[in-house]
Length: 220
Image (cartoon, rainbow, N blue to C red; front, side, top):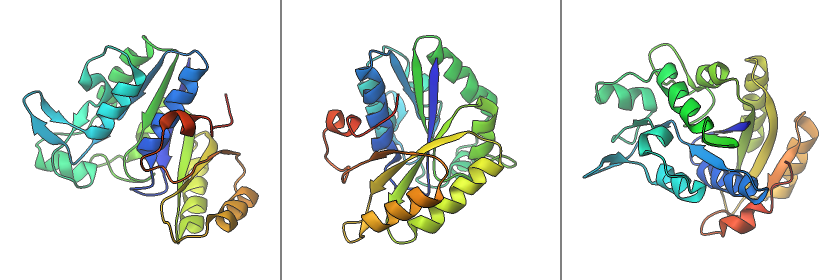
């Protein structure tokens, strides 16, 4: 059983694209893969309830016949930080509830790829943040570095926090998010200073073929 938790140096760094690419990469190895986005905000309301477009993409590429709430147990309408969205919705995000859904997914799959929300220390309730969820799940972490001005500092600080918090950082994805940023120098600097391998160097992810992106990933 393989599981990976995808987290980002910040919001809007391409975590969903990287999650989709990793799911496809594992499927290409002949594995039955489930995806999960435990917490989402900015969801749309429809006849079936609140739905998140990223969670729906994860379900589609996984191809498993499973309930939506297994993939996205906490869906909120306000496009704000998860603990604030939960407060406005009269809910409390509970780690145990997420782990219960994860275990259901894991029982049906050879691998589970989980997309985080926000950054490493984003609060999820009054006393806990994203890192507490990952510690409780005891799952290896892959860091998505959004390549833009400031990314070196953000990446090094985030990696340092992941390791000092006792989580298993196994590698990082380099993802260009700014067309005006010269990425090669940043990638070289981070490769020299991070003690974990670069697992993928993606092109600009928007409107890319996921199958092509999956081929950029270099680990099993």
